Amino acid sequence: QVQLAESGGGLVQAGGSLRLSCAASGTIFSFNDMGWYRQAPGKQRELVAAITSGGNTNYADSVKGRFTISRDNAKKTVYLQMNSLKPEDTAVYYCNARTPLGRLVWGQGTQVIVSS
Image: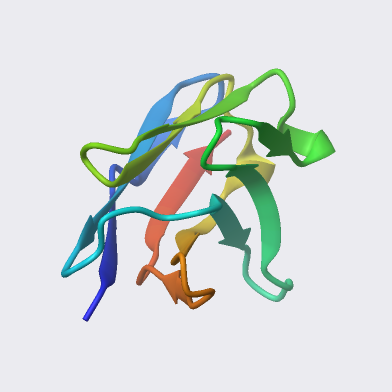
């Protein structure tokens, strides 16, 4: 069974940085698209950034220029470098990944809190 586990969340002051990691475990050799989503209290889950197996990226307008998504296929890991963090970035951040058979796998989430 394939599982994803996020790490790297925490409490940071506005203007600071965090790097989230999402590592896969289980019998999986590769993923197609991988991504990061977030959900703030009382709001719907939204896409933050996504990356294809070929390295093409897509970002939400609210994080463009501040966040960078990357992946290490050998380690089956996707990263989210978050710079210039704002209080409105506070949310639970989830990673997901699509297997070659089309199954979408989600991590359990990691909390990010940005204080003003």
